[in-house]
Image 1 (cartoon, rainbow, N blue to C red):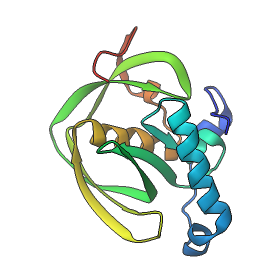
Image 2: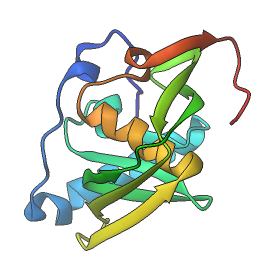
Image 3: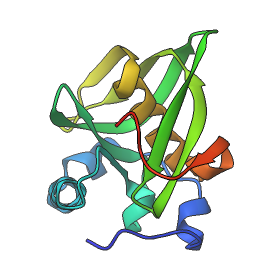
Length: 155
């Protein structure tokens, strides 16, 4: 798949929720496989539907070293404490910056099979989920950068 890059207009659009029928379709399951392959071949740790032209509320995120599917994710709880993280994005190549994110979150979502999941996350995994959820709302990490950097230091 082709990863769209900024300033492509699709990256600024809000993604639509998926229905159960859509989730179980062969077309959607193939989209998941293609997104995983695209993310892996680009050496990414997250990839959202809008980044590949699929305006649906789905992203792939690497957790515990393995890709996980998040469908219709919703961050339902955030910590008051925040942390600075150095981020980059497959849709904004060669740009890095410090972004202030919640230190800990709770996210509810549907997995690939449409089963309800709820997970408490912190560290890099929590940052990935916040970053990818932003993509679903048309927000890029550059909108939240506190300071631009030249190369990744924490990834």
